[in-house]
Amino acid sequence: MSRLYQVAVYLGVCAALSSCDRLAGGFLAEPKAFSEMPVEVTAKGGVVTLRAQHAFSAVACGPVSSDEDEPPPATWRAHCVGFDDCVVSVSYGDAVLEHDIQPQALLPGRCYRCNLKGSKGWGQAEFEITSFGDVRGCTKQP
Image (cartoon, rainbow, N blue to C red; front, side):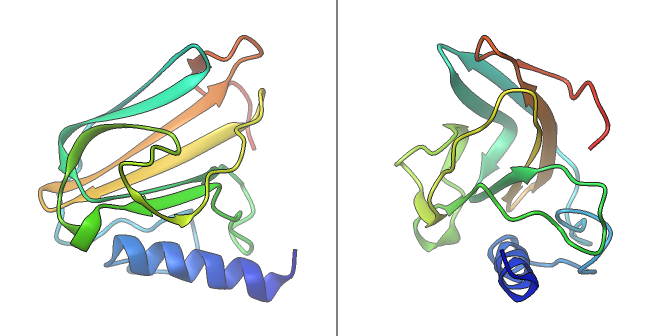
């Protein structure tokens, strides 16, 4: 994948979730005017579900990478109609949201980060898919 394409995807994620204050140093920068909200990630039957404390309007997921110069491409990015808060819980790739990037398969043994944004704050969860389709905290450095 070309560097230009990766940068375009990263900028698209920042635009969709708004208020990114830097383009390097992480998958998504922390929005300045938002408070952090807890995000719970669970899996049942191989379906990953993200649940936040408050309703949110956008989600972006991608693999975790230690390479700050080349953020990894998003594996899924979606938002609510009109970017209004519409969900508290969503399954990875859920059709209830409008997809900006169609969901890609989550691979076992890989660490992923999902970022959620809503009018009351933002949240982030890092997780790894097990070989059984469950989730756990990331066990290895990217």
